[in-house]
Length: 187
Image 1 (cartoon, rainbow, N blue to C red):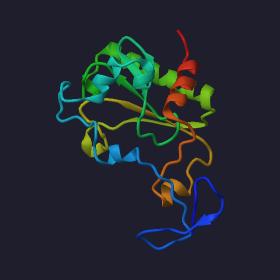
Image 2 (cartoon, rainbow, N blue to C red):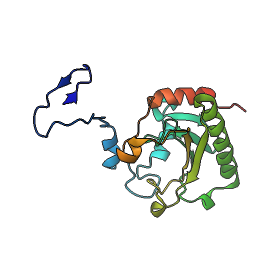
Image 3 (tube, rainbow, N blue to C red):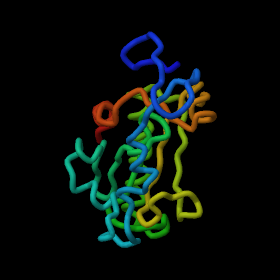
Image 4 (cartoon, helix red, strand yellow):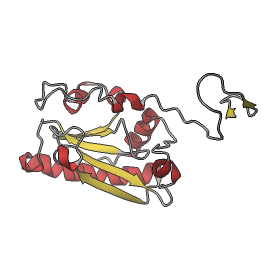
């Protein structure tokens, strides 16, 4: 028997398949990621790089939390946890060693501000912070450097990602963006 999303009474499953005791958590938005939609077609800035396109949008539409002169902070469209953000230089560079000193400094300052905002807005108890440099290192978009800041909480690793290969996010991305933008430290 399956549970109706609007009723607590079990309903018979029609169509293919065998009724079972599992609930379904439908995440159709993940298909864009699985299919590689919005991935760059090449390694150049004009090849559809989302990190080059996002700054052209409004903060709300681009899910931008804060803008600096050399870098910006943006929510990840496919987050590991609620509040998972990235700090990206505006300039299209692939490697950390390609950043100039102003970009390196502001990237570090924005990372610190990210930690402060995530602690203030969501009570994060820890963080995973890092760069995936190159496709073999796990970078989904290797041509444009971006530093991940993933907030963590005690007990946030549960059966859903481990067994179900599913992440449960308690908040819409726009709501998360609004909370983090409000909590972002001002100079």
